[in-house]
Length: 107
Length: 117
Image 1 (cartoon, rainbow over the protein chains, first blue to last red):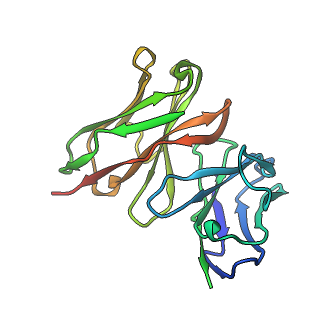
Image 2 (cartoon, rainbow over the protein chains, first blue to last red):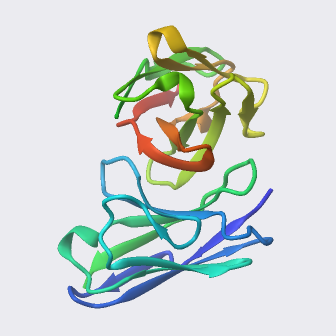
Image 3 (cartoon, rainbow over the protein chains, first blue to last red):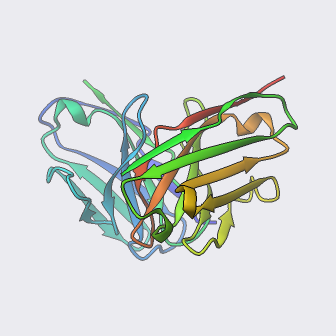
């Protein structure tokens, strides 16, 4: 199984700041990686797929990058609605594993 | 696109439960579908997948106990949960595959399954 190690587990930031969340796969996943945002009490929403492609309707302040085993999600100019939990996901092969999540909180 | 889960509840260990996911707003028969779960306060855990042609794949933790199925005439996805364990306690989400890729572009609101005596 492909293990996804996500960091940090939690992150505190201010409005307008830029933050980066990292995801490390246990083997090369050839950019077959997605990022999801989940707000409390809500279902996850797809943000990024294929490591760097923005899903329809997602603001351009979100971006994804990386290759091989190392990937990152960057959020520019944090807005109030961005404070949520974020998960990376291996899409290369079953089982489709997720990172353990990053909780982004307002400082 | 709308996905609405139902069938959750409190069940004793070793018992069974069947979840449903009613789909609308898209051609259900053309898409693979997934079940993903989230234990209280924990992260996301993929459970099972069924392709548009009804091929299935399961996570090791549920293989042999859970069965994913679909009824295209009713636009409904199912998950039969047998031999339930306390560690199966979670919110269960159904989700649509993203255009044949192993991503999830639409999710239901989730249904809670609690396994406890």
